[in-house]
Image 1 (cartoon, rainbow, N blue to C red):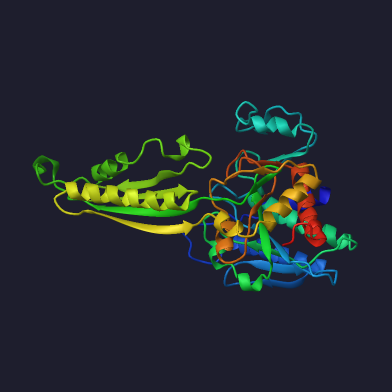
Image 2: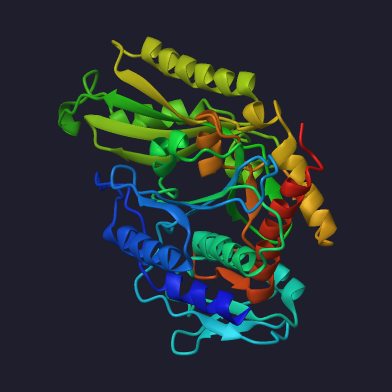
Length: 412
């Protein structure tokens, strides 16, 4: 466990925060820095086919099979970048045998992670808790996944008696800004199916995601001096507010859960003569997803019809789709993960994921890729935490999946 924690802490100290405004691949140099560090470590471990692809920012490698038995090759994938939150100078704190009480993150700043606010903390009493110092995120999303995959590989190297097929691993960039997987080279990663190790608490497992789109509405106003504006001024800001008021008030993230979809106005900027609204649209159901886009289109047309001339335009960009439509055609990766967790006494926590993963896009590139837990909680902020025991459970689950895959219990 000490080696796993040391590896994790070493990785999180590299600032790999991605940058949506950057057009480089990856979007930030820290991601390349960490990829090169890991590349060297994989080489020292003696893995095969180690390759850092400068065109897409993915580091891939193969742990070769150790048997002549025909065993499907499987893959494990994690991302190198962290979310849009302070990631410079990450200073993890370790609390051995955590007492289940409030955690003082930063005495100087008076920052405390309170059990009242984060009741899941109680579930980790007695474990080795790893937190931030309250000034940055931690980076367990997804450097825990990176470290866990590598530790699983090390375990298999140290236990050659465990039969396995080819195990492919990949560490990629820019997951947090939704770009990295767009360039994933499936042809160079010849697994039958794979897993992203990028979900939350122990047992979490997803093979359903949202269908996702972005909509950008541009509004052309007419700016006139307010003293002489009668019958002339068209306030683009007010037109934008009018469009937003036509959307269902209860179909927003803060009022939906489970399989319920939503609209989210996540950016609104404007002046009298020009406004821009950016929405994200989410739904698990493909038909409802299409209907949501159509509904928003119709509301824009409705407002255009009330103006002196069409002043509003809307542009849609589909971002990713529900990977269930791919994975349900062959449920082996799901059945395998569930069997592995049950073998280890871990309760599978299977639920529709209210977001997307790299696996959403990779599945549609032809490689079915559900999402396996990495063990952390409170991702993307100063209250992020993980425990050594949760990471160890992820390592054991990866190894158990590989063992069960070799045993052939769920092969079609």
